Image 1 (cartoon, chains in turn orange, brown):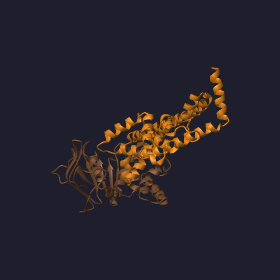
Image 2: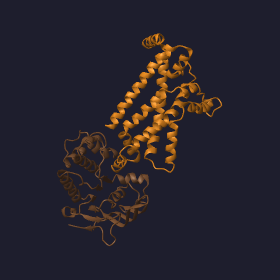
Image 3: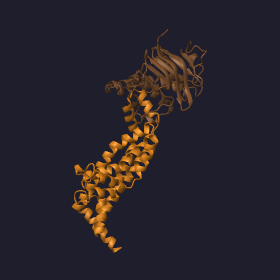
Image 4: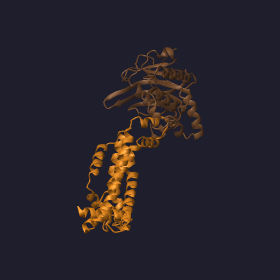
Length: 231
Length: 227
């Protein structure tokens, strides 16, 4: 108990004093997660909406694939991206391994099925009269889809928040693709894993408290958005 | 006799194995009020969706303004700007009444000032003046129906398609909508309206198109002018 209290005291001091290592890990986490979710949203929202409103022969297979990808272990995604960006991989010449860009690529792939699936659910749950109403008022197909996006904006926002929650708490792929380089690719989660292993429990605890704060904030936002959506 | 605006020939629409619409020939005349009469499931809504260019028939041809409709994306965009359908259960977008009524105008690139003027004018026409800033999703059923009608009219369509506009509305809304339909028809707007009301031809000068199980009766010279 004394050990935990002492570690907690040190952790609070690290947070309050603005330890450069802690701040660097927090910043790297937020930077990589924000970029990943931005890319995943740019790709996943239109993809989910097109799958949701579209009617095409392989739709059932695509839906099954999307559901399966959501449950894919993060280390497997890390492994696949690693094989693509390592020196001998197809993207080896781009030197992305152990860089923030490489991590963003991996975490984008991790968030993509989540964002696409949540967007798809939002569209499927939307009122079926939205698109025909917009079309009959003179909207083009694209404009009618934009209107649909506007009508299901809370569902789309929930998709982005859920994706962000996934990538910011991710450790397996981030470790494999980033290499946990201090001040460069070290995120909150990879730092917690490393420092705790090294015995610096207080440092891990400090980052853990911040990560928990972020996770709680995301959950609170998600709950708010879902309540807004229901009302 | 006014010229034909729509000419439908051997038009068939299927939902799976069920034939929802099976019309040999049908002409909709420009500037006239046509009323589709038939029981539930007789194909009125499906026919309106075809006339609104929202549903491509599985078979047959549709001629609009003398040209055969080829149902390509570009052509549909152009045609849908001429025709507006008011659905039976109208959907109002989230936001204000103003944003809803101005939607079609924004899609047509009308400037903001003109849109504001039109919104005010058409809301007054349906007896909803002063409702501009109200939340569209918080209106009563009759009010929502009238706002949806104002939204459709604001597009100034060549053809107005109305799917049972007098169903589930109070007496006040019903009178306003019916008077508006009569005055639009007198002004030369082509209107096709679905209705259950067999007595409508006594109140509104119109052409009746009877539908039953997706078909117009073969022996009846439809549509037939009344009043």
